[in-house]
Image (tube, rainbow, N blue to C red; front, top):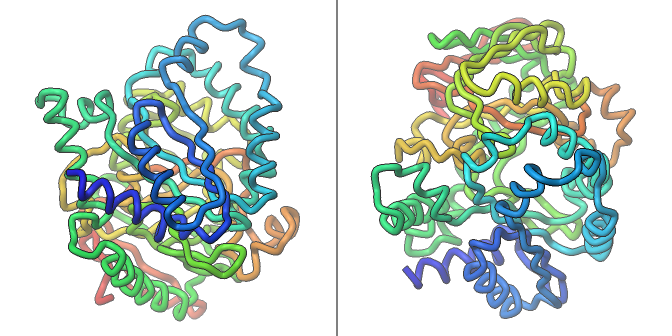
Length: 409
């Protein structure tokens, strides 16, 4: 176990963040993950980091606050958090976030409070978020087990056994179980590049999705769209991986170009609440109807964040036959579940999915067809029978997915 922990921490620092000499690393970590966060600190300093700053997160305290704080505080955002994150971002810091929340902790919290808090946080951190989404700073999101999360994933196992099983699943998902994880990620990127080459060379004007679960939707693509995936380049031209694991290649749809029905294939853990068996109906890009077996009010609050939250900002392709999907584990953690399934995202589009988009203003991006929003929430729609066709400028339909997997590439 210790050997894999060392390999994982080093992988995040050297490949995920790709820390540079004299660079600051900011780590956002749950307090339950303290030992691993400290190990990451050691690896970062050994790799030349100037300073490692850890911002501790305590979910239990957050839950107490939602339950007991004065109502008006949920419309306020602390200036010190904004000052801290923006200050380090302007210094060129790298940001590593450990995502390991308890999927059930917030299930009894008033969703309106959570929605209000999420909205003011998104507004307060808009500059910081924009820097991350345009790769002005390098960043990475990764996970390690906590007992509460592990017990949700493996409810029949004893706490320690559940935690060990989740460690094993994570090591496999991020290729730490292989002899040389760095080399494994280099090979993985080459495979992603082949898919990117296929999609970018065809330059489809739209994609059509269909499966037996009820998804039947057509998504128009912006004229200048581009597919990206795996590693990306930071401000100094160094490659980093924003997500570990990642199995997706993705782009954006036109904000007003989505028509049809989309049915979820996995639960969505949103702000500590599970939304299950949900679906959306889109017309001219906008959600005009929705339903959910569980968490409908939470979903409503998400959609009401702003107008852009009712539109899609991301299309991501992930084969059903992939390292995460093949583990047959529902992780209740979007970082893993989205990389086991084709998915869409409600909300803000990544500017880099438009050619030259990282250098465009918000207004210019909107004119090119990008969606803008205070939020960005992925949800899974992939199934083993999903079919996707790319539609060319001459209206030829080219198979992209058959039986849930890429066709011939």
